[in-house]
Image (cartoon, rainbow, N blue to C red; front, side, top):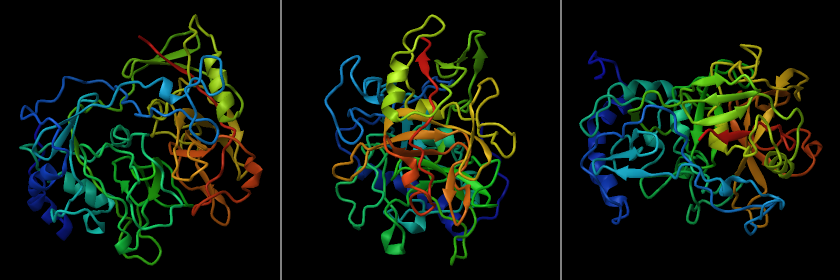
Length: 433
């Protein structure tokens, strides 16, 4: 269905976006690998449900570094690399667009929104600008582009990337982002404009139903430089006059993507008919480290099934309900069919647990390349900003050490003092078919 042609006031940046982005066909076409097949038949695959794209993680990790493939029953068996899921598959349409053959979504290939042939701070927009620009965007002969939801944007993340957090250099040579650069253009943060290398956050339409940092309106965004979902305040940062700026990719097709279809099986399991996954209705009831979470999953039998496993990061994120939060619905950010153990958080609030995924969050740090694993916060994502507050929102995907003592981090870690959650909870999954 075509979008309305009602005239909308645009900022200068948005106006040139509409006029110049057609030029991206030339720029993006010359950058990609010449061996990639293009297809001028741009019809989208007939996909109308919610298939989860695999993480593309093929390396096995222990508590700190890479390991050889573990055998059944050995430590660290059951991690993401052993359960690859749907192989990521893309089609370059040769017109500045990329089709995801798993999800049925079509994406813009580049986020060079000002059409000048490079990607830098000038290509970024505020969240409100990004929403408005999507309504007036045309590319590839289509005018039904939209700004993605958080679940649509997260479908592009690949955990074959390497997190550069803490990297002090300015060169990005050798860094690997969390997106397939054989198909998509990519740039890290614009250090010439005073940004950090990791400042490659992407705008979405998904707003937090609560607030972060003690009252900020917050958007959930995907960072394809460091491989995380966080809630980002949309207002101006200290010392700046404009709202926080984000890179922008547009999407079209499969408007059902990200919509769950849960069914209570009446036996302590929940099936999602949209993703083809079956979940345990209850969690394991206690915090455990990552190695123990894998072991728990691989030895679990329930409801006549022995093929339960620890979900990968993208599977786990698929069951987040972004319409719910501890502060607004007095619940975890998950459908009410699920049961979540209540905890007391660092601010002594009633809250809900974080859950381990089977996905390692790989780092550039020698000797610690596999020391962290990805998890999803179904309760508040706490951080210490002179006091403990929700800094990234219920529904954030973060990463923390696989082992250690959280008491070693009394004021958290990083610029927002992220609470370190080494003992996370477990919710198991299996494939329905």
